Amino acid sequence: MPTAARLTAALCLLVVAFLVSGMVIENGEEGKDYGIFTQVNMFIGVVCGWWIMGKRAGRGWTAAINNGLTGIASLVFWGLFVQGVYEMFRLAMRHRFDGPFEAVIAIFELGVEYGRQLIAPEILWTLAIGALVAGLATEEAKRRWR
Image 1 (spheres, rainbow, N blue to C red):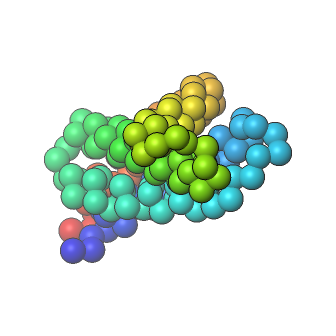
Image 2: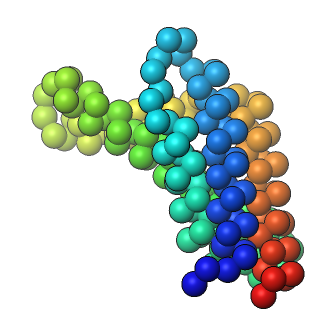
């Protein structure tokens, strides 16, 4: 069921995903082609905002901050997982793995490599402020437009 809280959460996480993806590309390897990295992360942000944050709105201000943190944590988790899977398939098509088990393990190794780029202070601050704003905005939308 579409609600204002779900739409607000989806838009907030879309913006956070866009900003953080741009920061990751700037801090990443020079000359690396990231392809549709930003667009995929923005889609994941919309899905996490709609399904995870939107349905949990309306439980109070403290729960709203926790909701924002949960939304950002799920965005980071699913973003790292999806990007790891995509990179694994790209490498598998070039026959970089000896077997399927090695390819599955590579998903997590590649996700950890992307996760190391998130340790930069400006990215951590963006994620923290984004979580706070997204949680409070979602709560306000739930209270204002029932």
